Image (cartoon, rainbow, N blue to C red; front, side, top):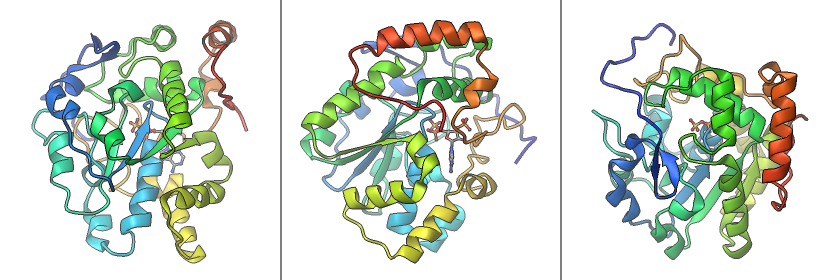
Length: 299
Ligand code: PPS
């Protein structure tokens, strides 16, 4: 998995203002088709701010729905083909919309990082189930930084200090973390088909979180199956599995940083200086003043 050559076909996009947030052109090139995407009532949307545990939850959902019935899917289909990334339009690959429209399985599991106001309206009209995962801001920023270093379609991250400033100012692709986590939390108050999860809770007790997820989805797999799923979706197992570790994704260079990097709560402590932490906390307090969400930065 290490030492792959990253194709020269991919160029780092710039973060550009689009529909009120920052995106890059890989997520706006196909905009009309994204906006007009036709969801079906049994579609399940997995939405997060980047690096919150999308892949982890996606894989759990995939195993819950297809783990027993489709062995070839588990053996030979990378996760990003099973669960298309709706807004992605990368050169030389089918767009996320085309991949989704080409899915023959039910339910269709769909990945998305768009903030709540940009989610295609058919998901709401069709009353689709939405699984949202949030992760504390500090670990999200660190994970996104390393991901931006190794993923050659992300804007050039610059140094860590510059990156952190951009995170705080909402200038990273997919906009402000603060608005993203808050937007879905607010929506949940009026749209009951959102299951709002926290990465830290998953790290703390994945069994409990899978149980809650199953209740939301109306699934009741036998306990042994749930245990099998949890084992397969363990960080080390997913890191070893070429179908879940993104090692086949040509935009990423694992020599710089692996996709499944640390998988921990609190890795921010090895990145933030004391001064950065003080500055961040002050800014965070201000931004989250009226937001009724509590995140854990250590467990
Ligand atoms: S993306 O690119 O936005 O879809 O990335 P996403 O999957 O949301 O987030 C990647 C981070 O999630 C960690 N991860 C896991 N942690 C614990 N257990 C499991 N099974 C797991 N799978 C993925 C992954 O390591 C990234 O976090 P960091 O902190 O960078 O390690």
